Image 1 (cartoon, one colour):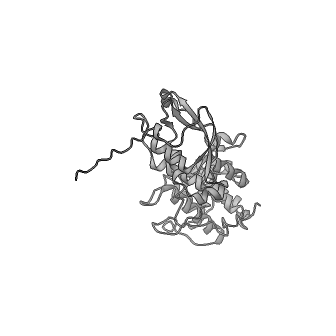
Image 2 (cartoon, helix red, strand yellow):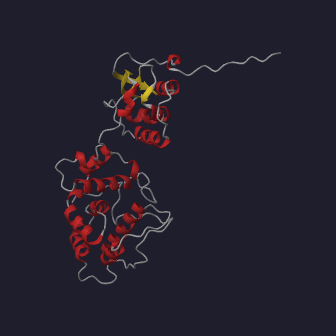
Image 3 (cartoon, helix red, strand yellow):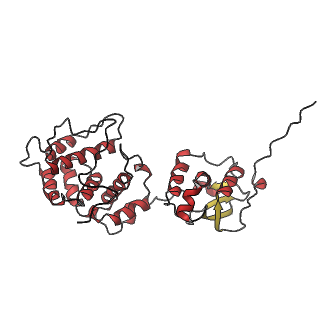
Length: 310
């Protein structure tokens, strides 16, 4: 008997069971719709490659409830119904946990602006704007870039990872701005931290993050002497954690393989602070973060409790 060959159905916008609206509007996009649009409307030869890391980042935001719905940066489709700008967000929504969506948004779909019938030649002009940073949004905040950097470190540290800050590069601008609002301590010592950076090379942002946590502990009164010792280095013994930390950064911080540089820097500043307030004896060899070593926490501070604002 001769075999019957079944030709696969061509995946085109015309075959999509979820039609686009006829004019721009906010639409409820379900996971089924997102999957169907991604399947049938991704075939345009000029569509840029799909980045798994970008869609995974968006999925993380959706599942954590940090995705902002119905922004004017909508899903854009051309005059034939093919995607111009949408694939990463559709991929993220299609793969997101339905349980997480219901928990954070109350339903298994998200709201998006949909822009159909757009000319294909606008693709090259999208995503060309000057991207807003957290510092741009912290209008009127002195040392805004450094304060925003401190907030980004705090947001990553709040995850409580035992070995570092793996989410650092995925912390979003709105989360940074919100963290600044939750942590007024970040704005107390940026001038002093900048002076220390000028004298020693100790990065300002991560230093502010450590100080903000310390300010919510019983050791807050030791911060002024800590800052003065780091700035001047005067009258410090050879085993003083402040002198050891200064020397660690003088001439350039040396990274250890297999540990992200930012994690090492945060760890050694935290270790030096902890030794300073607890009277622990340190050596230059001890002031480092080894591969596989648990990430240090600021003495007497727990993110679960968030300490107190002093």
